[in-house]
Image 1: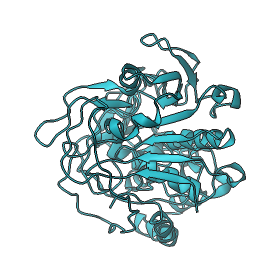
Image 2: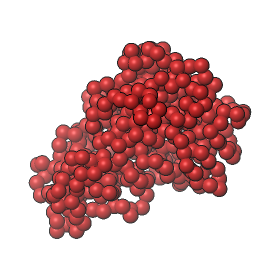
Image 3: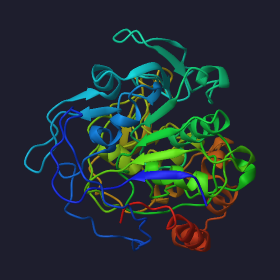
Image 4: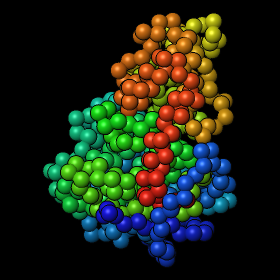
Length: 421
């Protein structure tokens, strides 16, 4: 059905150092089709147990030796120096630095949204440049050049994709994945994907994107929260024929050890400037809808995607207040320097689904409902229906019921591409 290879999971305890001398015996990988319940129970496996794909150097180093290599990476593309059941991550080195030391011939690095070092604003134009540490050329995949050109791939034999995702449709790293796969397919270059956990991989939720609302913040007919790792998602892109002209990319997935979709995983390095911690990552699928309204979602504060507020919300209803100001990742925050009224969710319990209550209540308590939404809301939702439902006073329960058929069909499709339980 699609062209790909999976370097499977090794069951059991693994201690991985940055070395290609360790030998492991891989069992045959099996795609797992077992679905989670609506609110699955978290497993007791944590980041202390999980070995990410990048750390399994012995599984992929032979695929890189003697090859001209390109790397799609950012600040999260690291190899952890120590990873076992009794010790937390004890430092890390960047993937690029690590495999350069192992003699891999890296020719260039491609940087997604937020740049190679992860400090740029959301949507900010990323310029090409030179990495000061390695002197490698850095080519932007954000802005006009979202897809590597054939000339940029001409001197490469293989491309590596290694980026920490957060499992939301509008988080653009999966859009970059799509374009990298498409470019590699057109140039007949294999793509090596080093898999990482999805911190929101324990549930599936949200409206399905309708094709007419395709954009860089939503390229595929999937729900807002898709519940897949990057490796699994790449298999779906291939299998569903989503690349231009229904091409397939030759992909090899280096899988993780001891990962399940129910695993608890605390992201060690913030995946972008405005997702600074696990709380923001958990709330992101719910609060990102505010980006399509006149409500600030915490940008310009130290609690990005953990608070929300607006000068246009009823201050008699909302007693929490703050003033956004420029900071890393938000040079021009919404309502810069203006007192906003809203809610602080930084101590909210972890959620296993999208909560529309924040957007619904904010709309109901907006001073001027006519200017609450902007055009970007439909782009984020992937449908006009959600805004119409909120404006019409439809309850969250009934809105979620309207997603049920689409989510059921998606889960059936998704099950074909799962690598992990």
